[in-house]
Length: 503
Ligand code: BGC
Image 1 (cartoon, rainbow, N blue to C red):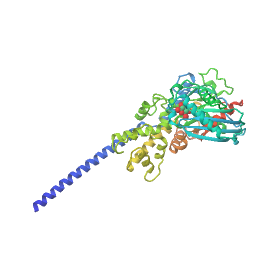
Image 2: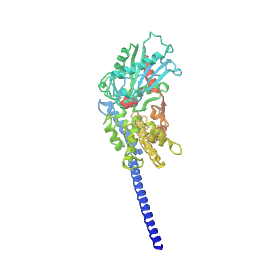
Image 3: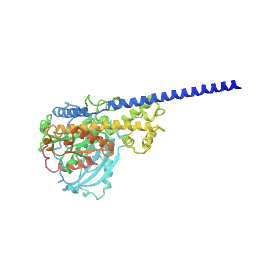
Image 4: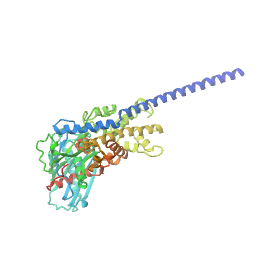
């Protein structure tokens, strides 16, 4: 009996030992896998680093590229497009004007009524709709017929609220958020599509004519009288309310900036035909490129798989269309190289399934259990993740968004440098900086207005780059619908002959 007991005890000890060994092995394996994802996170952090020195290099590179793009056509990846806008609205405009805005994800229609007094600007009607995804790779005819029919619906709804007699021709500004080589304020040809649009036969087509044709086919008595990039609309709106506004930036699905330039600095344009001595230049900064940009393997993959690879490299790092997909790619890699996210979700394999608004919701999740992170991961087919994995996802969102915001700030500082408003031109003495002129940069777009962390990181980086002495003279003004309203204002101001003050 005693012997039997000894054998039983020994057997139990052996079993306990092997269970313990299995558990220890499992724990070691789990730790190794966790270390693996932590390693992936560290790599991401390192390759996204944007210390002040690097940001300053970006600022210099942007200012240099701006200059090169102004000297000759094709002289830089920054296209520095002429807009033929030398007359920004100032509040004295009158009349009823319309704007139709084709953006990256939405289109908007608005009607404004102007009485000649800035304070009484009346946005009488505004309608926003998502762009049906089927339009993105449809045909020119389908796209413009869709826009014309939406506008027809908008006008039919207004009844007699528009202050316009039914016999008056309506004047429309077309805010078109894609790169256009303008030939006048009301005409221009599409250079290329961005932000996932891919209607092939349209490059080289006159955009205003395409819309006018579609409106005519429907018998609508509307005149497409201005063709305006969204950044230029935003600048007009900003300038209407605050004449110190000299630049505008859009942080939305895509990203871009425009600013007021002296015509004598636009060397590539022999005869700019402006009376004010200034012209708004559409930078198309989404295409900015420098080998010093902090690029990761995820950016490289995203670019290679995109419809416009080797193009719009800066936009792909800072645009709202792309941030979600960078985060998705990091999570996917982690889930492929370890099992911390459970079995690989097929949803996660789908490009652009994770939108930037979900990234901001996860990043800004302040619930104690990070329920928002858990909910969004569940939508991506990843359920039941422990707290430390939720925190990991939050950190990925932070790294990707912080890099975007800091690069965006370098872009803004680059413009300020180019126009001599960054405090570096006049002199380094404190008194020079105190003499600086107030400078306003209008900012529009959901990424800036809806994503608090992006906004905070960007504002912080701009202060870091400029230093407090200079930063106190620079005002970043967020606007909503500014680019659509501003285009209508621009159209109104092009009907009265005035000039903008010299920059
Ligand atoms: C376009 C720009 C536009 C920006 C913001 C970019 O993809 O190329 O023209 O201003 O998006 O909408």
